Image (tube, rainbow, N blue to C red; front, side, top):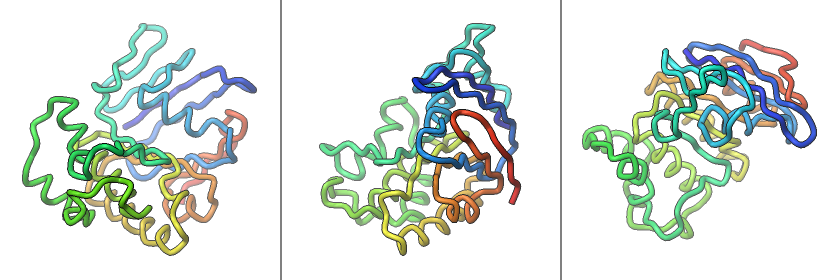
Length: 216
């Protein structure tokens, strides 16, 4: 279960989000600048709320009253950024394994083989990001996020740079990955079709406020 109560002052408004959900794919939907990415970054620990509380499965990530602010590395969250944020000087394999090495985790070789086979990236291992297509970068970013066995996966407009046919393919891929991993996914989009196809729950945000909840 993920519970997040976030208040964050932004340049043009104050973000207020308060929600709890068990599992599934939660979509944060709304126009650009409505506070969707800020919400993800607060959950991940990349930005600090002014007030609030963020809890995942009894682990407190943030509590303004108790002055708890768990470091990013201890939150066990996978994050796929909008631009994928792959390291250009590292090979695909080095990019995928970066989180494991950076967090000093033990690599489960069987899990590694399973994940890289599922995402069809093994033949890309020795390439560099500059030599990858958008779809290939997407697969590598997902592999890097999942190889650390996160308890939660955040995705910030992960399909925005892909052509339509590739987007359709990856929507199905993401739903299949969720069924396999059985952890909460939170996805940001301003594409209404994408929100309805992927989301089990859609939260509509506008200028930092939760306007509506829709269960699919």
